[in-house]
Amino acid sequence: MLTTSEASIAALAKRSVMTVADYLEIDTSVRQSSLDFPDTYGYDRADRLIAICKQLDGTDYINAIGGQHLYDKQYFAQQGLQLHFLDSPAITYAQFNNEFVPNLSIIDVLMFNSKTQIKAWLADFKLR
Image (cartoon, rainbow, N blue to C red; front, side):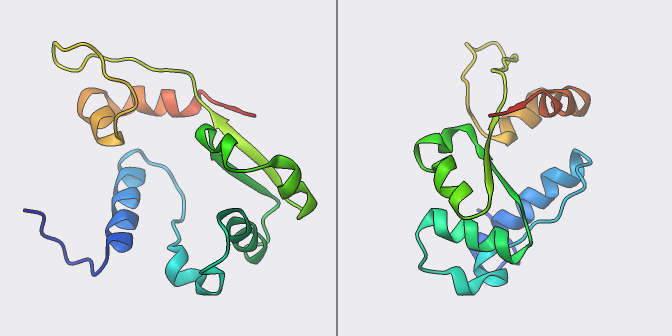
């Protein structure tokens, strides 16, 4: 059973991200769009991201590589934002004595790897 003082799944997710960032010594702020940008609720996903970036005076938006089929660089550019995709090399690591299962959660990565190794992997990316 999961016990938490968080009132919503979004708050729990935010706390989880912040906990991992703290552990990995990543200095960042985490915002909860439903609380911090409620005026964007109901926008289509690309327009919501664009509106949030503009409210934060952003010039660039970086998305996971899997979002290439969701978001169009030209559309973002027309709205005054540069869209980038985070492309990381494939990693493998020992998962007990089992065959490696890729693309699991950060929890799996944390269980089987040192903080130093994880930070090295995080620094090895390209923006596309």
